[in-house]
Length: 284
Image (cartoon, rainbow, N blue to C red; front, side, top):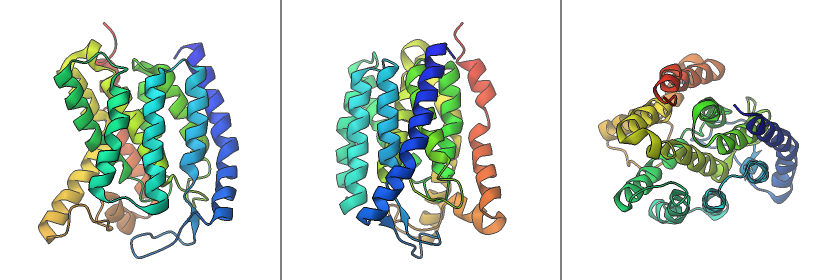
């Protein structure tokens, strides 16, 4: 990682760690709290405003790292969709439609043909949403993002972007580890899903379709495995595919092994294949 990227990471880390407690206090003051329920197993009402701190830290650090304004504009739109979903709730189809402009704008920062761009946007709709549903346990989504972003910050083509997101997420994670004092909210999970999507497709121009697809599948291993598990369970039980419940892989692991062991297992799944991906995508 170049010195500039290290400085961007440190800036984002400091900002994320400083802003997250402020976001928690603001969320509590404004009543922006996630209350316990049958499908939300946390013990007490918790602010869901962590994505705001993450967004501010990320944008400042990404701007300092000369990240493309198109990428930052897409990140802003993704964050706004999540914020609207957090505050008033969006239907599944409305939410998917609202995510398209963020993905379309972000994709313009990558050299893609028309069909490739459409494929990237379609893939993005899947990727940012399968990442979002990993945000079901304290520290799980943010920790998973950290594991994924480490690789992108080391060997990806968008090192500055990955470093900004990695630092901001680490700063937030300090307060999101169990017992979490603040949650990402949809604003944070959609933002991270967008960034992880972009740094994945940014490999395409130099790596080509097959290597990019293989590397992305390995790096996104836990979100993919979790979504496949949910799909199989809901289809077998006749449950609606888009209705929230506790049928995720991480829910099963949490019931069987406890929260901390579950985090270790899920982050371990995310870490599988990272060394081979680093070798696969290393510039020749």
